[in-house]
Image (cartoon, rainbow, N blue to C red; front, side, top):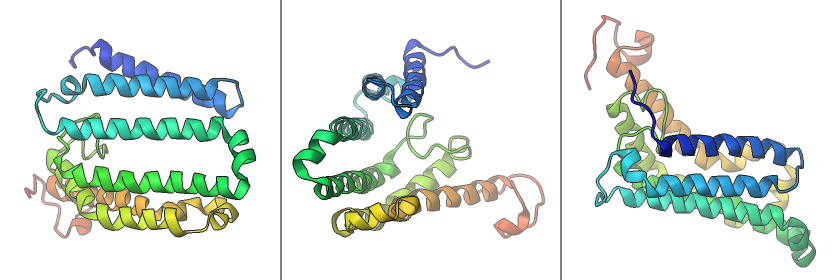
Length: 229
C-alpha cells in the first residue's frame, strides 16, 4: 500500500488543478482568470521550492538543491513575464507599436526557451532520480539507469540546441514567425530535438535493458530475462 500523501503534495496537486480550471476560464475570456492562474502557479512553485528537500528526499545541504531552486526561479520569471505581456498587451502595443511588440514577444518566448535549455541541460546530469522534476517519462521514473541515460544526453545536447534556439530568438524576423503561426513548432525545433532525442534514446535503452518490446529493435533475440547494461 502506498504511503498517504502529505499536505504539501496535496496542496501542490490542488493548485495544479486550479491552474487548469482558471486556464480554461482565461481561454474563454473570463476577467481576472489569467491573474488567478499566475497566483496559483507562483504558490505551487513556492511550496515546491520550500519543501524540495522533503519531496526529493535530499538533505538540506545537498548541492543538487541548487538546480531545484534555479529551475523554480526560472519558471516563476517565465510565468510573471508571460502574465505581464498578456495583461499589458494593449497599452504596450499602443506605446511601442505592433512591430516592436511582436519582436519583444518573439525574443521573450524563444529566448526564454533557449536559456532554459542551456541552464537546465547543463545541470541535467546532476538531477537526482525522482518523480517531481526532470525528464519524467514512464520508463525514466521506473528505472534509474534509464533516467541517468536520458539526463546525460540532455546535458550533451544542451549547448548546440540551446544556442540554436537563442539564434532563432535574436535573428529570425518576427514577421516571418507571424506569417507562419500554424508551423510555429518549426521555430521551436532545437528545443524539441533536445527533448525528443533523449526521450527516444532512453526508451530504447530501457527496452534493451529489460527485454521489453520486439527483439529486432534492440539488436538481440527475445530470450527472456533481463539484459543488463
